[in-house]
Length: 222
Length: 103
Length: 314
Figure 1 (cartoon, rainbow over the protein chains, first blue to last red):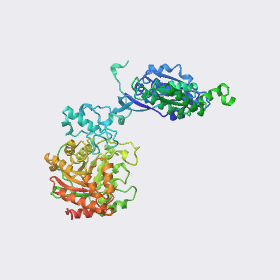
Figure 2: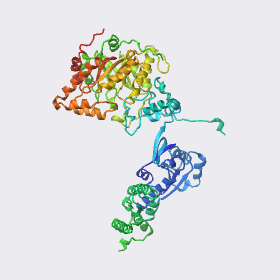
Figure 3: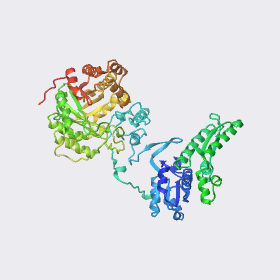
Figure 4: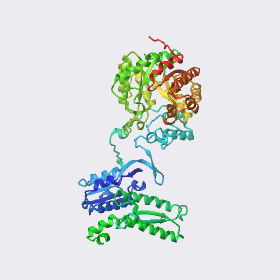
């Protein structure tokens, strides 16, 4: 899922400090699972903002809500009749959700309340790690199910590099060497012969490098 | 959220009593609470209310005298800090003086 | 892509090692400014004592005068440069362009590297490129040289003639695949290898045995990397702070066993001893002496190791 991290409250305060009425809009999707922008987080942020304004002697109204998702129109449409009363919305959804709200409510400033970070998994409660870079041309079948683009700091196709040490990446002892993991996995699968043949340069045109992407599934279109 | 609501309503301070570490009936409930208290303290510091108004103490259900001691300690601490800025602001907004101003 | 590694180029270094002699190279670290004279000074210090001079490419991700510009200057001085190129800072378009640029000035040696991560350098906030890795860069240069084609398939009228090199680190993990990685780079087209600097002689010999067992030493020329220790402080730094470096306790002890003003001398002595020992190891075809910011010692090391004078090639 998409993993995000709450923005520092100082940054959010700076965005809304001069407003009279703010809506904090959470999302029940990914950001709820990674505990960054769900209803719970929206409530805490709204309460903190109310206390901030109260302290400043301002009577700014701060309300909170959470939408099922902010990346599908029928759900964000639920705000249609409420949006007028707010000067701005702080959306705790991922970047996609924030943008979708901004596209629909063109006259309202929509501010991001979280930093969207990566596509990842829950390692354990409170810890999420990156797994996928959305390159658009998945090669996991050739690397034992471990992605060198997301998990190698240099996104090498023919790793590991000379900086791999004790299974850790040269950039930090906290970061596993992606290629070391691939090596161990291929060993387990009996596929070490994959290490002998050079992998050709990757086609990056299917990734961000090729420009903003679009997918159409004709059979699903109206 | 309970801590946030209490402070938002105007409480001058909140203290959370948890079991002694290692003795939690729910195993780690008191440890999770400790982290949440710390988290709320940080937020309160950042918005200018003051994280020291929220505190956590650990004691067992059988420690009556200790409970009283903590209650006194916390009361003294909050009294020294004065009314919460939220309460002062609320009273100002409602046009009523605080006890200090009245005195 | 063909797997012929024997393609001949005008490279002097290739001619010397193909003839069966030990090749000797050293490196020049360009300055952190626009003063080309520093490159000249360094090249002049070592030029007569080596067969070719490596120029590092933004080593440790620290911005320096570009490798290509320094190589051109060195070539024009009459010495033979080795263009080091990392894949961290340029994509395949930029790299192929630079290869053509180098070839247009008669530069015939290239070392293909992936490059240290930018977090090590002075611009940790930069985006990195890594469009290709070192193995793919090797494939690219080989294709440009042997098929006269760019990666896109475009046919060049005048193609670069590069003697292709790469780096190898016998001391990185996992050890079991270090020989296999070398095999892969050679399969991709590497013709000469410069290893990471060696202090752990036993581990290096173990790696060489694996290399020789697979006949890789006959497909590419292995050059042992040597860096003289300047001081005990440097030895400790290399041991603890540099990724992929293996410095045994015995080296630290040896440096610690001499007074501070004698440590540099001891480091040079140790380096020369190691070179003499490695000359006897099967498969070692040359030495790459990296005397970082200590280029003035290269002549002493080359002479002390019995590698001077260098063979003359017309």
